[in-house]
Amino acid sequence: MISRLENSLRHLSTFKFCFILIIIAALRVGVSPIGKEWFGWLLNASKAFPDATSYISYSPIPVLILKLLGTSNPYVWWLLWLLIDITWIIICFKLIEKHYPSSARALQLIFIMSQSIMVNLTMIGHYDNLIFIAGSLLLFYEKKSVYFLSSVIVGGANPYLGFASGVCFIFYYFYSENKKHLEISLFWLLVNLVYLVGTHLWYVAPATGTRESIVLGQVSEVIKGSIGVWWFIPLTILGPLTLVYASIIYEKLNQTRSKSMLRIFSLFFATFLIPSAMAYLILDHTRIGVAAGGVVSLLFIFENFEKINEKVILFEYPLLTFLFVIWVLTPPIIIDSGGVFRLPYLKYIQL
Image (cartoon, rainbow, N blue to C red; front, side):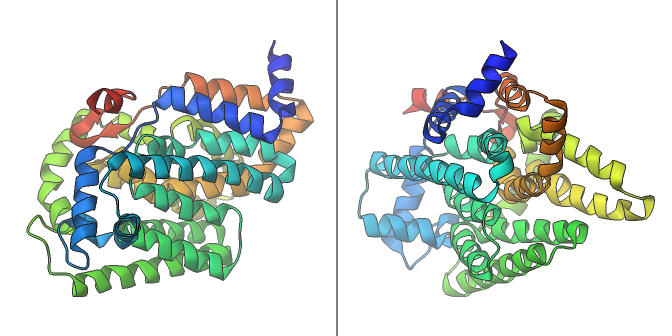
């Protein structure tokens, strides 16, 4: 049975494979839109632009997109972003085949298994959708123009999270010493810094507060809530990919001399510690940690998966079956505001 499933997963066409995985992802996590209340804040920001109405005004790209659409119907917004997200997943599957041909099928499965996909599918229409789309460009291209484009999109979605991701990329560079990662970090840090300074100079701070004032005002209560779920929050950063991540780290440790352990720590800091710390300290917990570090950890897995794949081929392990079973059996855990476990289908009930 295992060999039959392995063969089926390997020989399905890309479209069928992608379609099946999207359906499973939808059933697993409950594809659902961002709430009507959040859409209302976005709508108010778009109507008042260029004046600020709330912290969402500091995310100019979704504000301008909604303003250009000229709709006040949340269902139009949700449908648009559902189509964008599904289309982007399909495009990424094709790009994986092009840029990682020897391990394409496994990386396609890893891509759909990522917490970034799960969080985005449960927040259709949120600016995090833009962050993941822009960040995932880095999985496929090594061009400064792409680094710049991705940083502009991320900054226009949420410059705070974009800046945090830039910090993660700096630590990833300390580990890899790859010029690409340094260039990404510099683009993301500088462009998002320009967004942060520019929007604060442009806008008069809204009565409801800026993001930093809201986060600082909530931090003591958030920490209290985090204590109650302290063990679960780190598990939500990598989710089903924790075992894949750990296996690559194990390989790296076997190849690393003690004098290079500082580089391993930098990697751990970039892909896990910074995102986990943000998830502990900021109200939305899992969403924040995954948005800040999800692309960095996924890039690390993509760039270092080849050696794992070589062992799989050598020893004829049923890798796809293993990944598929792990993904299906791992609970889709998201820690939401107030330390509450998000119920996958709750938003449907609340519509």
